[in-house]
Length: 232
Length: 289
Image (cartoon, rainbow over all chains, first blue to last red; front, side):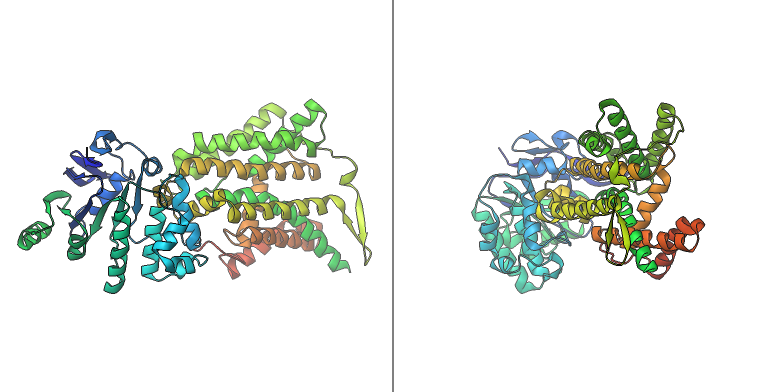
C-alpha cells in the first residue's frame, strides 16, 4: 500500500480552481519530486495534503486512510510535517523555541532536539538567537529541523532552494539525504529541476493545476520535461 | 511634596487601569481580537462577585475562588462556541460579535439587577493607609491593587516565556497559519487564551468594584481606559501596558489637582498627545500591525 495517494485531487481558492484531478502516489521510503513553473499548483498540492485546503476526504489517502477532511494539526499528528515555502519561522521565537514548536504534537520517533543539532551543528551554536538573526541557509535548516521534530513519516518540502546560494543548497540537500536514510518519505517541491531530479527517484510535473508528466528520474528525456514544464 | 504626592497617587491608580488592560491586550495580542465586550466582562465579573458574596457571605476577595473559574469557563466557551467562528474574515466580524455580546451583557445585567449602583465591601482595608517619609499618606488598597497588577503581569510573562503553552501562544501570535501546520490546534489555543484573559478580567472586575461603584452600564468606560493603557504602552508589551496604566493614572491625578472636573478629560488628553507623538505607543513590540 502506498503511504500517500491522491485520488483526482481538486482544490480551490474560493471560486478559483487551482488543482484538477491530480493523481499522485508515494511509496513508503521514497523521495518524490514535484516540479513545475510558477503557479503550476505545486504549493497548493502540498497545502491540500497537509490539510490547509479543504478537500473531499477520499481525495487524500495517507496509509490507506482518508484524510482530506482533516485539519492541519490533525494531519501533523498522523505523521505529515511540512517545511513551508519561504521557511516561515516564527520571528519572535528563538531557534530552539521554533524547533520545540515543531515538536508540539509530541509524536514519538527518532528526532529530538539533540538529533536535530547533530544533523545541523550550526543550529546548536545559534539556538538562543531569534530566528530572523539567522542567514537564509540557517533558517532553512531550522525550518527542516522544526518539521523533523514532529517525527513525520512523510516530510513535505516546499522550495528548499528558494533564495539560497548554490553551495548552501548543496549542503541542505546533503542533510536531506540523512533524513531519508532514517526511512522518512519525502515529497520535494522545487522550481530548480536539476536539484529536484538529483534528489528523487521519481518526479511529477505539474502544469497549470494539472498533471503533465510523471516518470522515474533515471534516464529521463530532458525534452519531454521541458515540454511538460512549459506546456509546449 | 504636593506634586510628588499627586504622582504617587496617580501611579497607584494606574495599577487598576493596567489590570483592566491585561485581558484586552492578551486577546488582541494572540488572536487579533478587538474585544469590544471587554469592559462589560469586567463589570460582569463584579456582578458575579456580588451574587457570590450575597449568596455565601464570603468577602469579595475570597469570592474570587468562584468568580475566577466562572469567568475562565465563560471565556473558554465564548471563544470556542462563538468567536472562533468569526476568525479568518478580517477584523470586522469579531468586532461586531463582541459588540453584540457587550449589548447583551449590559441589558442582561439591567434586567437581572436593575440600574442601581452597586458596590462590593471588603471592610477596613478600603480606608486603611500608611504614611511614608515626606508626610505622604498612601492608601493600602491602591497599593495592594498595584502589587496585584505587577504580580499579574509578572506571572503572565512567566507563562509566555517559560512554558510550552506560552511558546505556542507566541507562535500563533506570530503566524497562525504556520502554527497550525506545525501541529498546534489554534482554535483550542484561542479558547484557552480568552479563558486565561478572563482570569485577569475577573480579578480586575472584583478589585475595581471594591474601590468604585458600578452599574450595568459601567463597562464601556473601562473598555476605553483599558484600550488607552494598551495603546500608550505599545501593543504586545505587557510591562508597557502597566506603564500605560500609570501614565493614565498620573495624568488623571494631575488633572484632578488642577480642577476636579478635569480628572477624566486629562487622561484622555494624555492618551491623544501620546498617540500623536508616538503613534505606536511608548514601547511597541508587535511590529506587524
